[in-house]
Figure 1 (cartoon, rainbow, N blue to C red):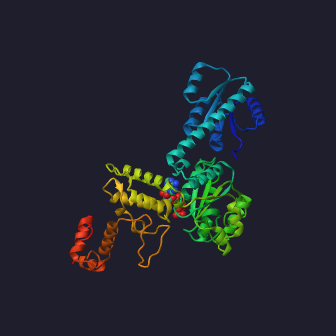
Figure 2: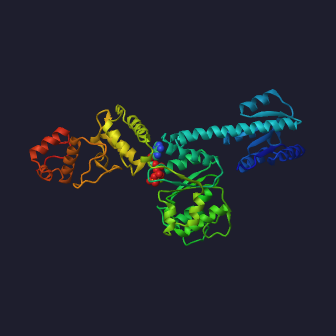
Figure 3: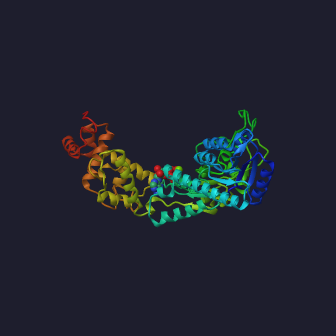
Length: 467
Ligand SMILES: Nc1ncnc2c1ncn2[C@@H]1O[C@H](COP(=O)(O)OP(=O)(O)OP(=O)(O)O)[C@@H](O)[C@H]1O
Ligand SMILES: [Mg+2]
């Protein structure tokens, strides 16, 4: 995908420029030529060359000045000095200025060829290092995705391979909170596109007309408010990745336009007549089954087929076995870091059992929230049943048996005392802290309730006795 490398040749001697240019082009480089300092700087700005070949003696200054200027503009710029007489002070100055290498005149072409090859390799490596560093510092790499289960590993493996490929459209499918955002970013930052933009848009968040102009941009006068031309996300993301979240919510007319973009790799601004070639990878995400949506006419079947060529299914948390515990530990570590002095160690055995059996309909996001909440409430060193949301502590397990009473014993079992405490708390909340009324709801005496609340540590801390 990388375009041809461009080499800037700076020399006041027309014949040298011609000879070098010819050689470089025969090695498949693109060339631009300047004959003095001013032109060199201008072309450097405009062309962003991979390498600059700089003669030292120029009519309006020195190649060393060019070197300094371009290094200031871009410290990663690579310059090779070409000089008739290698004199020591110049050499020292050039090396201090960050020149990559020296070549003496007359230029030996074989030497030049090797120098350029090495320089490009250096530049590629630097780029690679920078990208890896950036990826790590931003925390968007695959290594940030926690989980060892076969189900998740399979998705990650596929995503990694797709990231490294030249596939231009990808569909991420998974329930809410399974990590679609996380996967999309990891794919972008693991791809060759990492240094180009990653832009995201949520198709459910904006009305169709706005999404269209956001994505495609528009020409001046395309509609009443279009006072001047605007670049859309497609244009801004050139070379990079666009994340279309909740693609299932995209309006049908826009689905047709998107399909055209995917099939022809080009697009038109709203109100525009010109096709603009597009080099953007599109990652679409949905928590819906788009095939089903297409059966009822909410999603274009042809777009579904196009997108699902590469579909990555992210498994729900309840199908990831022990990942629940790994993730828990991760969020506990994070909570401990956030609140210095806190040393939560893990889950009580009872809670661990509940975690393994819970449905986790909100997946990793729900787990994160549960741990965050518990870590605030918990004083002990284990997360206990008492500080879990009612859903988790009480029921909603994926193997549940309905009982005639409507009360369901969790498959993992639960301490009777926990149930009593929880219900006592709920009664107090429901009655706005009125002890008499709360006791009535529970069919016990005021004193019994007060005793219970005191014992569980909830009396007084929750609500004052208003009765
Ligand atoms: N395997 C994982 N390891 C670590 N963190 C994860 C993992 N999966 C999800 N998360 C975290 O869980 C939260 C929810 O993930 P994310 O936003 O990617 O889900 P989503 O699938 O995009 O959800 P939605 O459909 O609601 O948009 C984020 O904070 C994310 O960092
Ligand atoms: Mg999301």
